[in-house]
Length: 640
Ligand SMILES: Cc1ncc(C[n+]2csc(CCOP(=O)(O)OP(=O)(O)O)c2C)c(N)n1
Ligand SMILES: CC(=O)[C@@H](O)[C@H](O)COP(=O)(O)O
Ligand SMILES: [Mg+2]
Image 1 (cartoon, rainbow, N blue to C red):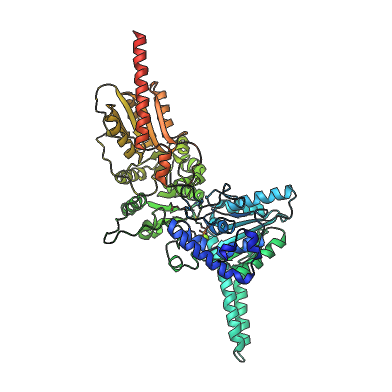
Image 2: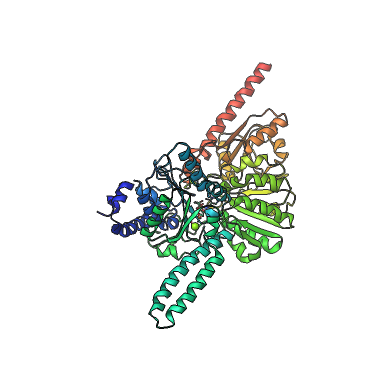
């Protein structure tokens, strides 16, 4: 039986002799490498917190002492130690979430995978403990060096530091990386702390060596020590936190489980807010991850089945991100005013090649979308055209900045939202199902949803040519959709299928939003087989809607809109409002994501569950057209 097999809960862990822990850590690493390599997931971050999580659950009493994780992608070890070891369907339908899940365990608190929130939760829970006189409980928050570059973290620190009676232990999991090396002044500061620790070790080595050296040894060591003291004073590494009123312990080797335990016990017994600064390595213990320069296996895909003997592996499909990435590099050569901005996701958003080609024109602001949006507004005011590349779900973080900075000041900022719509394995807080709704209310903002690669290229160019309003493009995760050429264009709207019956009044106008064009064309083909005339259009720019869409609708009996976004307040509602404003009494059906938090599963499986498939849509719309025809026939009969 392995050590891991003997563990059922944190109590079992607490009873383990310390000398057993290195072997347990090795077993956990082996488990993570085996399981996550097969399923895909955040292997690197979790390999980096094995000893740290062991120490957390040996020192604190979860869930009485809530153990909170920022972003939550590094909570696999926490799950293993709290009785969840079936990783067979990790991040898949019916399997474990890749983040903490309140439904899964009483030991889990934060399901939101948006970074930089954990300290706010810690502050709130600590206040609740004081008010409810739970003075013997400690709130523990694990926050990464990347998450600490988010503004919310400092709002929370400001509050946590203001009350010395609140028992909060902040564990800074400092591996020097978000995906790429963490950027910014804070990152430099943390680096200086790491250096301090490096100096401590170097000095210890020097002391040992020099003490052996006759005569010159001791004086030389004193000189070195003076240098280090001076350097330490000069950098004042821990002073920043202590000046805030937070006790600082560290830096500590985050892979020395006993050292972390010792520091955590000190922090717990301190009885007030304490920072325990742990130095860790992303991907620790797995050389391919440790040596992976781009992101140390921050998030890996599921292992692909080996091709049958003799077969060549299928070429990887082109991704939406790659199309954006290449067009940005091309545009960067044509436009010296183009600048790129990322919120700590240079590679995942595809801006890395642009940064490589134009290093002075690309900025990684850290996990700070709000700062990204407002500093982009100022870059535009300064005569440049910024392109802010973020995941669609993270745009929520800077909605006010889009509204009250970029739009209010009518500045030409282009936001490119990758991973829009249903994403899949990252669950509720990662699906990009909000932007088509929330952006509808932003005055002057223009919103494009390209249906395929040529349109992404075309509309990115159209967007960066707009210098008096924010523009937004949004596209999904994964492989780019097949190209669909228009059979005509009226205004800025592409016609993809013209109803076959011709004549004044066609059965159905199907408005395809972006990549849903492929599904809508299949719907039209299915319905044509039933003798139903369907026109399919792609508005391309869904805000503002081109008036030609209303004119086209007037020639149809039913209008339907299909979009990969929450239904409420999105494009479907905008089309319905435009028809009402034109006093057109035509029924409008809107198809999209019901306004609920979606679980984790494969994108295609979720789209099928939502009924956003050709089969389901054709069936529903055939019924709608039939009911509308019957209604019209009845009205005609009644009017005779
Ligand atoms: C608001 C927000 N923006 C971007 C992301 C994408 N993201 C997920 S993890 C991560 C890096 C986190 O770095 P760190 O906090 O240091 O944790 P580590 O992965 O190093 O353990 C980022 C940028 C996010 N989850 N939330
Ligand atoms: C935790 C987080 O926000 C990211 O690591 C995310 O899981 C990556 O998603 P992609 O795999 O779509 O890049
Ligand atoms: Mg980090």
